Amino acid sequence: MLHRLRPWIAAALALAIVGLGHAYLRRWGRGLVWLLTVVGASVVLHSVNDVEPVNPLTNPEGVPAVVLVPITVLVLLSAVDAYVLGRRDRDRARTQARTVVGGTDDRSADGPAESSSGTSDRSSGTPDRSSGSGPTTTGTERPPTRNAVPAAPEETPAVTCPHCGKETDAELDFCHWCTEPLPTAEDDGTGAVR
Image 1 (cartoon, one colour):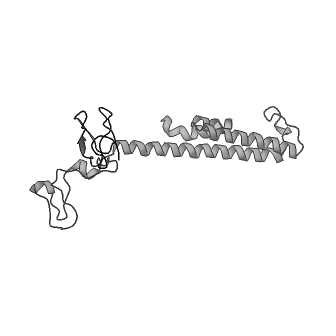
Image 2: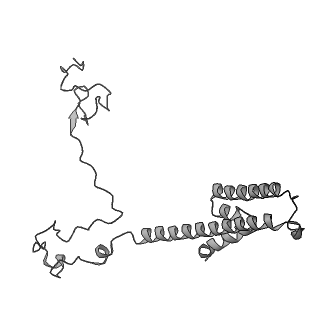
Image 3: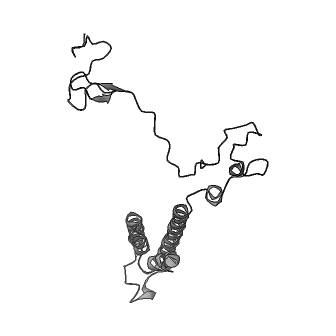
């Protein structure tokens, strides 16, 4: 329930104190920028119009319209920005929750895949080769999902270290077991490069 109200709470806090709604959304920098913008605009408008700054809470008639209207517009824009950010964060959280919960492909989770002829590949036990295009499956493989981890790369062949006799990676210049240099094609077998 509170998650649904989050954009409205952020907007209300931004109306109360500029930047507070953004701080509620944990957008500290953006809230600080809005606060500095409103305070800076207030200072500039007061000095340009040669108006003495007054507290608008104690003396609302003392603030002239040339200062009050632009500052009010900036505060409203800040509240709208906080509301939009709150909605965007809420929608992003919903999308991530749906992805985590429903991360598998619906066809692979519900049952056997249908072939082009309308029969199940698992029912016959043999792959359907009638279409003649694309790879076929035996029905036991699952199709890759959006969140599938790519297959591991081909492993490099291992070589035997002439010093310790253990297998080590052929791409290395030394044995990771005994740290002795491995002979290469240019070596004469003694470890010294010609």
